[in-house]
Length: 184
Image (cartoon, rainbow, N blue to C red; front, top):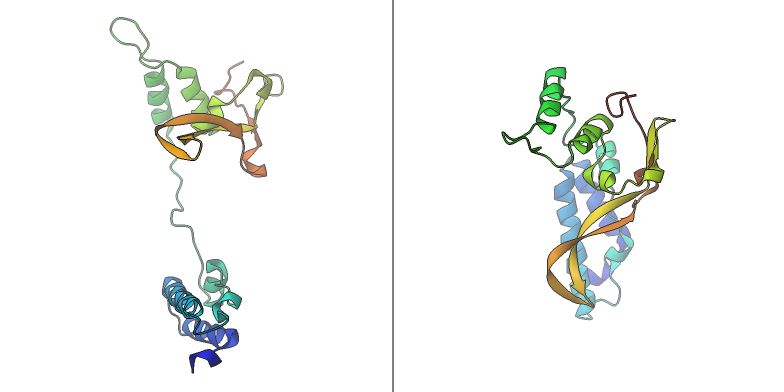
């Protein structure tokens, strides 16, 4: 009877699927179906307690380790510009229209991003106090975020830019400035 099923029984079912070398996504779908099924039974008062509440879904990395498989990131390669591509980039950043006006408003910002790896949101939040020319580094302390507009609890069409603190401790970091980022 369904009322006799315990959390231990359900863990055993999920472990069986894992040990049979089913894909993580397959086992996760089984987990979701079981969780919803028992949630429905408790909602309908057929069961007084949902046994799936005591069955955590195994993390993907642990699942892959248990199957002796490696959980690799989906993209492993990093594209590096060649010296020729860097030169083309710099030339374009500082290029001008035929009337002499610059094509880009802040070409130095593009060069700084190219040489430091700064994201646009990090660059836009830099203050003079974040830049140490003598020590040849800059401090990233905050970030620019594009967010939906809100008025009270209602949604307003459009987006706005907000400056906020960096989300995590690793988001705050010191970025060295090489000779190309800031020539002497």
